[in-house]
Length: 388
Ligand SMILES: [Zn+2]
Image: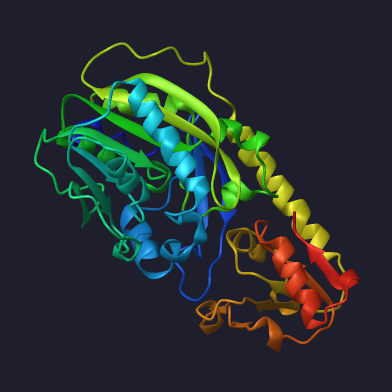
């Protein structure tokens, strides 16, 4: 495995030169692992943009101690939007004749896809693996061929060459040791076994902006992939790419640009890729500029008055380091977040916050609901500023 790990300072996907692109200061509540400045690098060859100065043990601490994926509606296994997505994944597998065999979904979250696949008649063992045991919630009436295990994607609990298929949806953008995961996946697959990967399509971020600097504000997304980057990393780890798919897929809260690669273990000819990767680095630089303009706009609101902010979201954690903490008051409806502080500032209950100055509604995805709740509490409409 170490043989195919790129040198420090080189691209984790293709191994070519990847110079420093920009610094992005993040923040978090309390002793968050994200109270740091991320150093983004960009590969000149495959176009990957990634955070250089974070490691997987640090990210693991985030998932264990800070992250609340397990309670987010986003990942509800019953939501029709997620079922639509599972059906799409299964159709991609079916297009390659993959309708059975022993499979594992690594980073399975709540296990929705594994359960859905087995319920649809998949012939073979289906195993969901996740590092966050809180995510492996009790699914009712599990089919007999389904199991779930706590496990690390860098150290999978399977024998060598024991699986026909591995799937990985929204995992690789979270992993610093990219080739470590790909090598480990190659280890557990049988010769000719398939690996279906999905990540956000960084080459299409600009067409699905969601809100200012949204894509680079997701602090735990440390890889922003092009198709070339994924394909190069797969090649370095004993795979070839059979198919690249790009489409917009739904979640319960919004839709996103999806990039999928179907890879196969063993030597072979890659399918045709675009001649040059999309310019993710340019979009990262634009996003940082847009974030600075947003901070300037907010700072200029009612100078001298208090700025109340509702919602400790990822986008707020990108913005806070650019604002004057002396003016800020924070509130959030989550009881868990109300136990935390940001640089000594308490996170209050929205009802406990004095109605004075301007109220900034931070989260892009829940802005309407928060604005309505603020109006109900007595905030005047003209005092509410919604981030976009
Ligand atoms: Zn590269």
